Length: 405
Image (cartoon, rainbow, N blue to C red; front, side, top):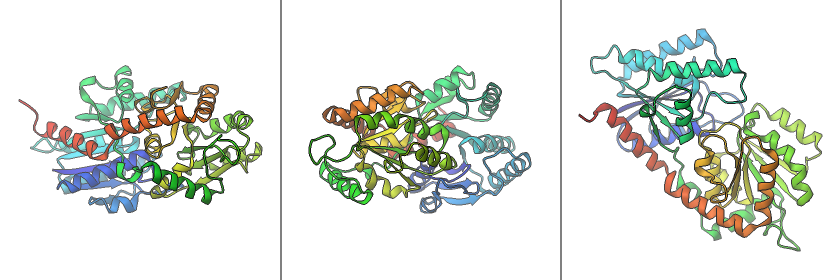
């Protein structure tokens, strides 16, 4: 097959990693893979180098930008139609909101001009563009756009079941148009035995200036560490975490926070850290190369995600593989990974007291936390491998190109 993936920005993020892994797996399988993307800007980091190594042919579309800019959006639409005519893909697979809108319109329009009724158009729902925190008018606009775009798409791939439920509930698309394919993770990158985890934990804590050891084990014990890996954005919950911090410090005066990631909300996060007098407690590591994440995560005891909007949070998957207990709000696809009391702790969205207590419970009972983490890591290994994702996407493509009689 010839496959064209389209994504808005190749920043360091879950949707982008999903797309690059898809490109790499499909290229390895012998398909002709193309990846179109917009200019990469901002503090979140870039996956461009990894995309170059994927085996896909890359096409930068200068007019493919995240903000709504009608003239650029029209130019992007025309550029994508021109690219589709040039490479004649069997599949146009779009990712993220802006690329999903413009790319689906372009693919559908060019399909109407093809005697072979190609390309088939697929869109992955990595997260919901609409959510409960929006102004009602904005919420209605996004839902309306999704309904229009769903009619210009052969198949909707959701990274978790709640994405499908939301689309069906809002009458965006019927259940029959949707399929759930979990976003794949490179399991080998995060695989480690207990001895290797202990070695990485000691090394990372030394590097970060945190004493190594077992939390709350008595004299000489190390400081408990809570990590949050996400871009710095109000919806990702760094502000909520800082509100919980005083309660955690009352129970664990030596506790440390690791904030891994960067973004446009950094000035506000830094202001709140300073206003709370937490400069010595919070280590704002900023942008960290993805290859370093499995080296740093073992330093943490709990990985927390107080996010208000998630498709399928890869950072929780990676945390479990690194041996970190997890606690999160039940946003979107979080519940596919974190089953409360089974694979971690999961509380209602925005319930800061409940999440604060969940973290304290995990820190207070290391044996229970370890049991939940082991169960979570086993679930992740069974369900979230990148190879499985690529194979399932292949099945979807083939079902569209050669439907059963």
